[in-house]
Image (cartoon, rainbow, N blue to C red):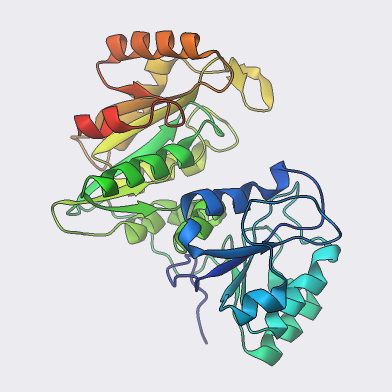
Length: 340
């Protein structure tokens, strides 16, 4: 009996052909947009159905054209409420399978639960990658000291820019010649990197062990930059955040927050945490597996305030906490990497 792995450690085959669905919601294609922005080299083209106006600016190729040009994986680069596979998409998925492509999805609904897709995959001997699923072979965390260095992004809340910050730091470090890898822990990150663990789909007992497997012993000068999830102060997602803190055994934490957010996302009855309290609690919990963990920087998402307000807030935060404060979209992350 083959045990299905909980992690996508077997890298997805590149290049990708990105499927943008059949609608007109820009938000729905955020996963595709993330892949196209952060790993454009693996993107051969894009296709949308039902006269959809959506585009990422990639070459518009039919599924057959993409296959003829060498596309290996048809990526459902979509997100929707409920994480379902829209019936409108099924013919496109089946056509990609018939053209010999693997299919990758970060949605909650498993591809092999849809009979037409399952039959086509078996017939044409292609793989279906449900990157959020399969949770049976990870071990529990041990907290044993591991070699190498690790950076983990944490947050005052979810949706404050942890993935973007992690990718920006990784790219800046690579440009400077660091020995560094991005470690994905969410479906978009996994599809960008081609490997990783969708940690929010792992059974709670195995979260820290999963991160230990994702970021094992390494060379002394090697850095893993680990994508954070959720927040210790968000009652919906605090569990996965704590498991990440313990499993990462981070040397450096980067706190991510959104300027002006006064309550936890979608929970107006819960106020946003005090930044100092949030930093201290994350450091305290991270110290269980690395007593020497430090705060290395603060990533301030300034999308809701003016440039002048952002500059003022960053300066105030730097003065108070003594670490670089940056907005990866506006200032970049050079100050953080300088400080490493």
